[in-house]
Image (tube, rainbow, N blue to C red; front, side, top):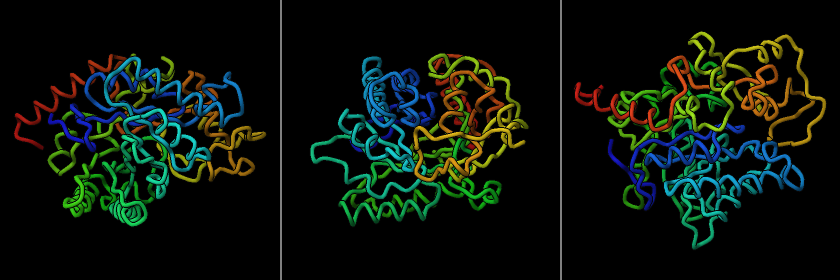
Length: 358
């Protein structure tokens, strides 16, 4: 596998670990992936809940939690550490400012279009900015807005297709439509990125449902510089979630994966279970909202609190939460080390290459 550059950062292994909240990808997983030459990513979603014993309110706890996770990752790794920040978070600006102040290598911003992201970057900052998009149109709009308003172009673009886990940037009827498939999107976004070649090299990273070395080769042959993978890293020793949560992935079958409607107003891909069935029967309802963590969430109209549900699941309380997942969770067979996962990916990639590509 060839390395590629995000700005002046050389990504030796062209694999970005997807940011997974709440408490699934923190410093443990991020540092392990970074140590293998990939980009390890801390999710800042729900940090105020994970660091609930810190002083201050939810927003303050989130800032302290993010600082601590970045510092812990730095202690464990000299590799590339990123932070995934959802634009839909109420404390989006706090999370961006904290990441930059802590000199994180890369900010990945999705779940909304991060139009103002470059405005937070001081002159001397070395933090790279990478938007996550689900269409070539969004990629073009962001490039043009950043260029016109800040004289800045993205340092890379992540393109997340409809087979991803968690919240999806598609309508339900687009999820199975080949017009919206990652295979369709990658060449379109590569073409947008190439149109800025005279000004900046913008690598394109393929994401969503990528599970094998063969998949990696396929998307690199389409013009992607690297891939983002999430689900595959949940069933690792270093993943920050509980073993109970990881075993939900190990035991999941293809038919257990379903599309749900999240309280934040987007469809999401998750593993079916007791909590989802309880929601469908109308048995769950948030009594209050102590966090107001998502801009678009109105707890009086929500069937449940998404941040509480994801937090409980990651801790292993599956009666009170569920696991988001990519489409290929059925390929998760056992809990192993990050080193082992990456070693398998390299072997699969090499075998696919020797077989003459995909």
